[in-house]
Figure 1 (cartoon, helix red, strand yellow):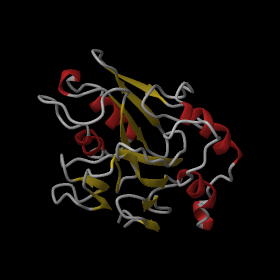
Figure 2: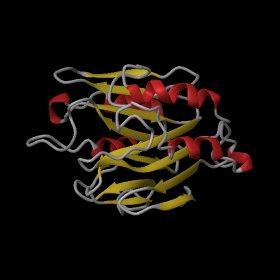
Figure 3: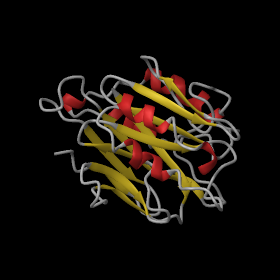
Length: 236
């Protein structure tokens, strides 16, 4: 299973790149949000990955609500995606602003959806390519996704065994969009208001046993300072 992700956030929101930042969770490798203490994307030593996205109209914290970054860490407390999705589907929906949460391992993948005023819904993700942003899984009303989908379909699929990630690295870092598109249409963008793509990540979850082939986690920072693609500290 392959995952490519861009983090879109306010440029001045401080964060640490992926690493083992939680002494009480030594099995977790994830980026750390220094404002709220949680994460936007991470991987654990059992080969489970989790990523959280804000839904439309819910950027930033809200008084009386817990940080959605906690959900990534809670998902990564589990040894497989099925258990993580089951546990997170029973959280109190009133405790969080709306979100999309992706949880996956080498066998299963789930989209957990919390829309404003609704319960948490857990949906299995089918085989094949799926894209998601601030709306529903697979929707193309978001112009950015409509432009990205044919480009991903045409790009060379990463080959982790050959350490070949060039196709998706180029796509995730691309600032190209057709003339006349809005400033947030490219996969990597920056707006005048300080909202931008601050980093990108790639994860491969091998189909074989973890002891034989380990997951790969790659990361690149764009803002506030650029840093080239690199392998993150891999699970032990």
